Length: 372
Image 1: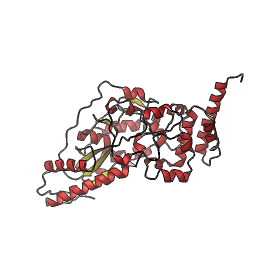
Image 2: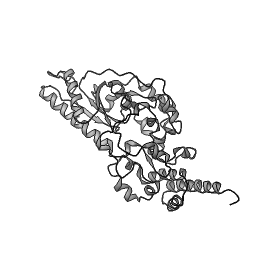
Image 3: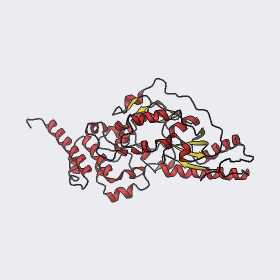
Image 4: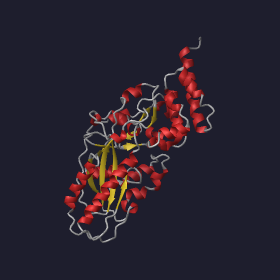
C-alpha cells in the first residue's frame, strides 16, 4: 500500500510507538526488532563492486535489481524507515558435525530442515504492520500509513538494515551475527512512518578468521567478501546448470547448502533451539543419500511441500545427491543407486550420475590394486 506525500501524523508519539513495535514483535515470536533509516548509500558501493567482479555468478537477478536494492524508495515510494526483525531458527536435529562426517548421509543446511521461512516471517510481519496501522488510526493520523513486508523475497539489503538497526552486525562470513549467534532469519517492513532509528551495535568478530579457514571451497575470499561462484550454497541451490567438476569433490555430502562457516563460529557455541515452525521434517537432518536419491519427482514434490528445498526442483536435487554419492565411501548400495539413474531423462542428472559412478569405480579399482 502507498502513502500520500506530505503525510500529517496527528498526535503520533513515534518514540513511544517504536517501543510498542518492539513489544508487539516479540509477542509474534521475533527475538529482536530495530529501526533503520531507508538510506543504504554507505553499503551500495560494495554491492556494485561485488557485481562488477562477477561474484554473483549466474544470479542475474542480483545485477538486474541492483538499483532497487540500493534505493529502497524505488521498491516502495515514500519509504522513510525500515523495521528490521530477527527470528531464530536453529532446530533440534542430529549433530551437524556427525552428519558431515558420515559420507552415507546427506547434509542439509539447518535453515532448510523445516518449514519455508518466507511465509512464516512475512505472515508475522504482516500482522505486525497491521497492528501498527491500527495504532496509527487510533491516534487520528491524517494520512494513510504505507508499508510493505519482506523476507528474502525482494531486492532488499537485509544484513545492512539489520546492522543499521542495531539487531546484528555483519560477520566476516558476510552473514548477520549477534552475541546469540547467526542461526536466524531476517525480515523487514518498509514504512512511510518517520520512525526514529536505533544505533548500530559494534562488531565483535575481532581477529577471528575461523569462518574463512573453515570454508570447504575458500569462497570467503577475504573478510566480509564471498565469491558466490565458489560457495556450496550457491552451487547446490542457486546454480541451475552443472556444478564445476573441480569443485565437486570439495562439496562432500552437502546436498543443499552449507553451514561450515556458522558451525565453527564461536558465537554459535551456545545456540538455543529456535522457533518451532522450523522443526525438522521428513528426517532430513540425517537421511541416507541412497534413500533421498530414490525419491521420484512426485515423492519429492509431496514430501517437500512447504519446504524451501522444493524450489530447486527434482533435477537439481538429484544432481546434488549424485555428487554426494560420488564423494561417499563406496558400497554396493551406492553403486546400485547410481546405476538406477543412468538413464534419467535429464542430461544434467545423467552427467552428474556418470561422474559419480566413474569416481566410485575408480576408487574401487585403486583400492583393489593392479594385481587383483
